[in-house]
Image (tube, rainbow over all chains, first blue to last red; front, side, top):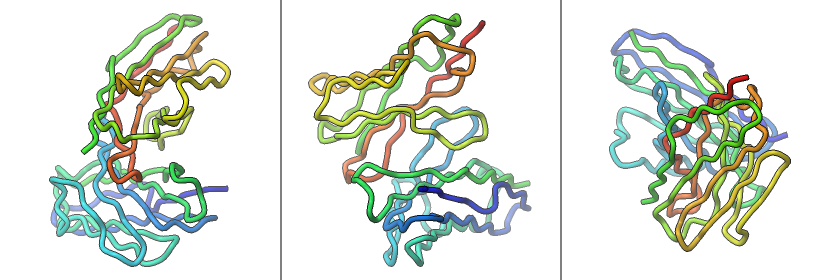
Length: 117
Length: 112
């Protein structure tokens, strides 16, 4: 149980295009999902906290107009990178906190490798 | 907000030796401290965690200690094996008590 999927697992796009990444909790409902970004050989940096049915909370320095987050259901959150540029190339990882789980539980998706040419 | 410092950034040990990775955190209200192992291109995997109401937890070759007064916690791996080679991250809850804030990671290399 407690499986989180991400789609796509990797994507290559041209500079200036938008890319949507999906994060799904497959066997549980998640009130809260988190989006992290990880550059090569670096740590996971929290980008935003996504709550079902409400606006996401973005970390300082993360442009909310560039990284659009939608948490439309208890099993799906999407991250759209708008007008992507090469510096947005990174590994994007989501995690989901179960509705019925303990206060500390969260499960990570497998990540999405974004390459912007 | 929460800040997590992790040391060392790289650690090389011989197979069978012990490895210790240390982290400090800034927010005294943090109450949950997990450790993750991440292999290249994969998701982080939870290997052990500790809550603020205990000082030590052990799971076979892996143990974590927590000193709340000093705001630091450590990962101890005994009898290291080549398959332990990976990047290890410590983390702590941020002020909201929900999102995890990660340390910068330690690349552990175990040579046989």
